[in-house]
Image 1 (cartoon, helix red, strand yellow):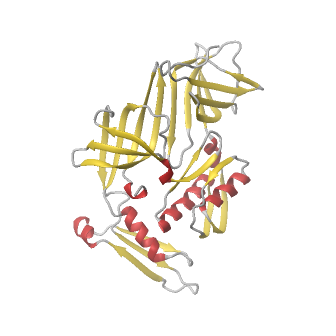
Image 2: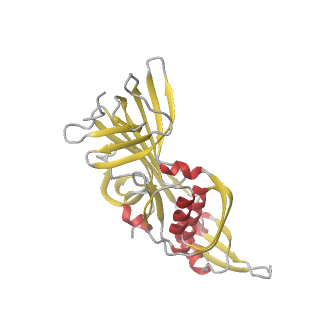
Image 3: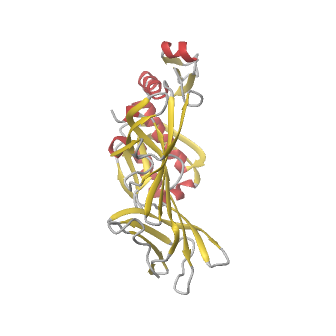
Length: 331
């Protein structure tokens, strides 16, 4: 069987291998490969179709690896196979994050988000890579009957709410990795000549708050101590958009309220760029630079990649990117 190769021209070789039954197999792939990542809540996903012949044999759970030249792109496991009468097999594989969809209950005390990832990885026998020290110690992390991925995301959210520092979890070729978003910044420039098309939305509907009300509950079940951070100018423009939250003893309510206001007191700008020239460095969690006329503004800023879908097909590598304007994370 011929390996998937030269999909991107003579200078770069894309290879796909399936490890099953002690054998490394290099199947013929129809219609290219699609690789998808999302910053929150979903594992990395690889989709492709192979031609079945007498030499090809693999089952659910088989390991799949994709490399782009000398760069490791994806390592995961076959979760679904769909066949047709032509003996073509559509394959869906996911990276290690798929196993974080298991549900259980965790109650953890005095723990950082990176330590939460380490603890869960050990409990579920998953491999880890770099887990950066997230700094903030969470007094109590109480996560009853939810996916362990949500438990990790809760820990990351508490970190960003209390420190303004955003960390992102991803699978780095078979190893769970947690890094500060600042380390993900690339030099990719997206402008009018590189983006074939885009969809652009501005909104204060779902995630915008100009008034933060935090209440620290006392140990004797009293009324609690309120902490308020607000922007009177934006209250005048949009009305009161209030976020309410009870905070734990040990949290710095004033710092948390200030960080939350900085994160949410704005118009959220979401941009989907379509059919951009592919760049294998870019995945969900990456930072890119935008220089684009969006109609209501000329955007010249760093953007955070929320979702990335790469298409490798017939000598071309393109990608669709969903971007979020989070300039504050990059300084």
